[in-house]
Image (tube, rainbow, N blue to C red):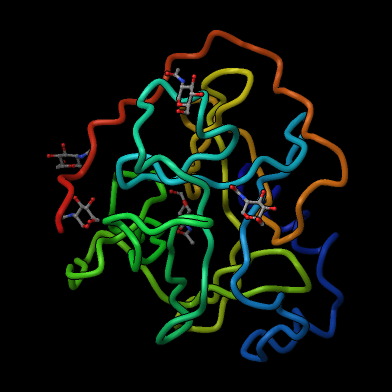
Length: 204
Ligand SMILES: *[C@@H]1O[C@H](CO)[C@@H](O)[C@H](O)[C@H]1NC(C)=O
Ligand SMILES: *[C@@H]1O[C@H](CO)[C@@H](O)[C@H](O)[C@H]1NC(C)=O
Ligand SMILES: *[C@@H]1O[C@H](CO)[C@@H](O)[C@H](O)[C@H]1NC(C)=O
Ligand SMILES: *[C@@H]1O[C@H](CO)[C@@H](O)[C@H](O)[C@H]1NC(C)=O
Ligand SMILES: *[C@@H]1O[C@H](CO)[C@@H](O)[C@H](O)[C@H]1NC(C)=O
């Protein structure tokens, strides 16, 4: 079912010419640094933020785990189309972390940030991020383009980002580099079980 949705989204968003030439880098990537915003049904462009090594979107200051390291993320492109993160308007110990999605062999589907001094592991993929226009895609090693971001609604101002997983009630979202023109409407507060945020250890 999810792959049908994925196909529909891709077909709706990408002209045939792009689908026929998946290796081609999408043009018109935003200028750097850029921020990312999550859009979906009733999710009107929530800014991505860093919280204990994991990717959320919404209002960072309303997060229960409210510390100075919880901050909206700004990106620049690094090696192999990795996206190197730092807090907007600040530095923090997680500056230089790279965005990751779970690899196909991982059963942890949360999206997060690999600390700068960490070489990574087979459970995560940190390369191949790209844009079509302002919309984020991932280009796999074989050239397949995927756009499988989903979000778990945690409260009216916070969602947690996942990859290729709707099993806990996550809803599809797209990530874009453009901010909403008006303040994002809050997500209706459905009392969902918050995802466990047992965090990876902070490494310095
Ligand atoms: C989080 O921190 C911000 C800024 O210091 C503060 O305004 C806000 O009230 C805090 N929120 C919580 C839930 O502690
Ligand atoms: C970052 O700084 C710019 C310019 O001062 C400001 O407009 C923007 O609101 C700031 N963003 C955050 C997330 O603090
Ligand atoms: C997404 O999940 C499905 C079902 O688990 C799997 O077959 C597929 O390979 C996954 N796709 C990616 C790009 O990880
Ligand atoms: C992933 O699977 C392994 C082996 O089945 C298990 O030990 C581990 O707890 C699982 N991790 C998560 C996050 O579900
Ligand atoms: C892989 O790295 C990520 C990010 O640091 C971490 O959350 C995850 O636990 C690591 N997985 C393994 C199997 O080491």
